[in-house]
Length: 101
Image (cartoon, rainbow, N blue to C red; front, top):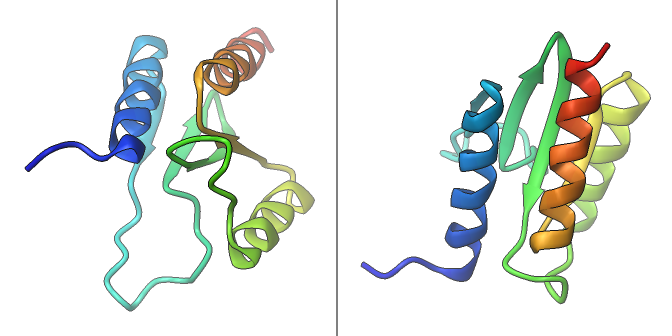
C-alpha cells in the first residue's frame, strides 16, 4: 500500500517528535472517541500539544477540528496545523521553546 500525501507529512512530524524525545500518540478513531481530536496528541515538557496534519495547505481542517483546537488553546494547551516544511519548522520552534522553559 502506497503512502498518502498526509501519511508522508505525519511521518515527518513523528520523525521531528522523536528527534526531540517528545511523548506522543495517535488517538484511535474507532467510533468511540470524540470528533475533531487532533491527529497527534503530545506532551512536551509538561505542556499539551495537539497536532492536526494535512497533506498540503489546500486541505483545510473541519469545523470540529478548529473548534477542538480552540478548546485546547482555551485550556492552556497548544494546537497546530502542520502541512509543509514551513509549518514543520514552526512546530520545531514550538517544541524548542517548550523545552527551554
